[in-house]
Image: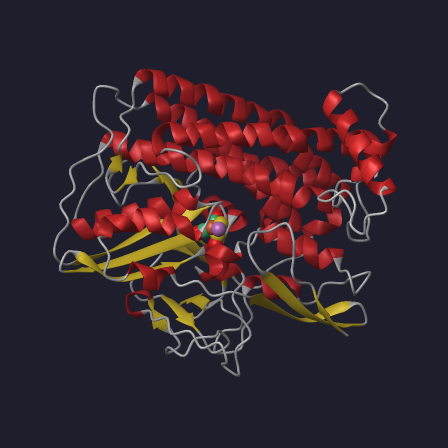
Length: 504
Ligand code: NFE
């Protein structure tokens, strides 16, 4: 039986997942990116300092990651070292965006896959927000509309959390989290400019100087976000994990893991980072090679350009009618290997290197209470919990990092754009490893390449026929209701795909 899950909702952009179900098992799955964008074409011939602005328009969810990757790439191409304040400001802006994004993903994009929202209909308390939601859902359900009470209902058939108090509590946090997300975005905006597309991020730093009153405002906002993470987000994650232990086994990708590392401790391009970069293959972590190892296959993607090109030589010739192709997403590979990127990769790659003792302690703590090994982070629940671990570590880091700003010094440095040069910039967007590459000619952009997290995770088959990370996580899954497949949708949501980014 063939079932298309698209358009999959509660994610960014246009994703279809084509499945073949035999005896209630997903026998095959294809991730289909249904649109073409072409930012790399738009950038050709432009002023290089447009790049960190234009690439933010790739996405309204992770714009700062693009601005930061672009700034790093330009610093590399201009032989420019960021100022002390500049690098810290980059971190404060990008880190706050991660916090916003994790909360958005858990509450608005995933929680309703697990939480039974109809529990609110039994609510008898006095909380005004919950009373309003209850009244609104009740009226919507009575209205006779074909799809009443969106985005809460309708929903896929399946098991949900069976505890009214936990369900109602999670709904309350769903509502509160939107205010908290706003605070995270306001914190980023203090130094970067208005969310979602910050005008203040540049190679070498930020145009906003770190005045003391701004630092205090930033810290106050991040402290509130941090409290929410510890008091509500992580307990809600644990509730879901305890209610759905089978999801430690569901949704495992069948390749390696890669992280580019996140939040450098100093302006130098080889600085240690809060989360270490690395490629984890067969239990061993190795350093990331940007020059040769990353290639993009296009046998099954709608491009006529050659397959298997590395980043420096990447091309983009759209071919909508290509017979063998089923998606607009290319298939990036690392030394020919399929890898998963994202929160689980970020945590596992760091854990295996012992880079961050607090991360190790948190992973070991959760592994102990769930009676799992750290490798089980490669699962639906594992990806969700990894975001929670990242959120807790990042919030603490941002508060400490903001103390290191020097209000007597500027936030940016003078930029001289050379006539020629090239540079790579790597960071971790919330959804995973993000690479920007820039090459200059006559002081202009000759070539720009982005290799983006969801491109890795939602990649189609490569030229050898190996499926992408999400495809492998879906294949073999047992589904109770083949034409709905809540199990498959939970797997897809655990990756938090962003198709706007994937096809960029
Ligand atoms: Ni549009 Fe993004 C993140 C990047 S995912 S959300 O996180 O880069 O491909």
